[in-house]
Length: 220
Image 1 (cartoon, rainbow, N blue to C red):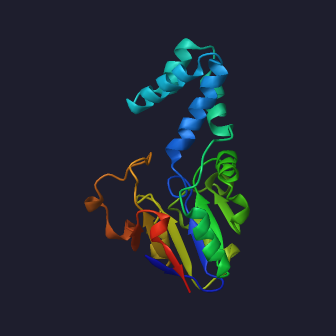
Image 2 (cartoon, rainbow, N blue to C red; image 1 turned 45 degrees about the vertical axis):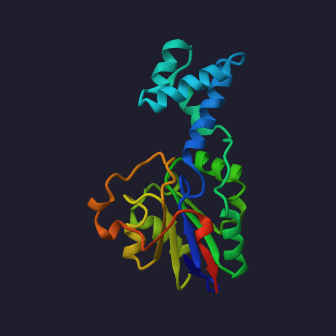
C-alpha cells in the first residue's frame, strides 16, 4: 500500500498491537513478577502464570492464594516495570521514511501515563515523536474526538493519517474528521479481538489495510 507524504503531513499511530505486540508486554510483566516471587524457580511460576492467562483464569487472584502479595502490589509491578519489548519489523524504517520527507509523527494511545511512556522508551521510539498523547494525561479515551483534535491543535497540517489496529475505537473519529486511516491486521497475537468484522458499521473501518509495515510504501 502506498502512503504519500508531503512536507508537514502528520502521521499518527496507535501504540499497543500497532507498533508492537501487547502480549509481549504481558509476558514481560509476568516474568518480572515471577522473578520477584520465585527467584530460584521463576521459570516454573512464569509458565504457570501464562498457562492461567491462556485458559482465561484470573492470574493475579491465583497468585495471591499462594504468595504474600496484594493485588495493588501486583498491579504496580505490572504497570510500572520496564518491559522487554521490541517494535514490529520495519517500524523504524517507516518512521525514517516519513521524517525524510519532512512528515511529523504523533501517537494517540489509551492507558496510564507511566506504563505507556515506559513502553515507548523501551521500544526506542519515544524520541522520534513530535507529539505524544496518552489518555490518562488528558482524561479522555478513544474514540473521543478531543484526543484527535488535540493532535490537530498541536501539529497544524493540511493532512493527517491514523494507523491503528482496534476497529472498535481507532478509526471512527479520524474518519469523521477527514483523516486518512490505515488498519494493521491482527497477526494472531492481538490481546483485543474485534469479533465479527461483517457486523461492524462501515464508518468504524479504516480506509486501507496492511498486514505489516513492509507492505506500507512511503512515497512523495
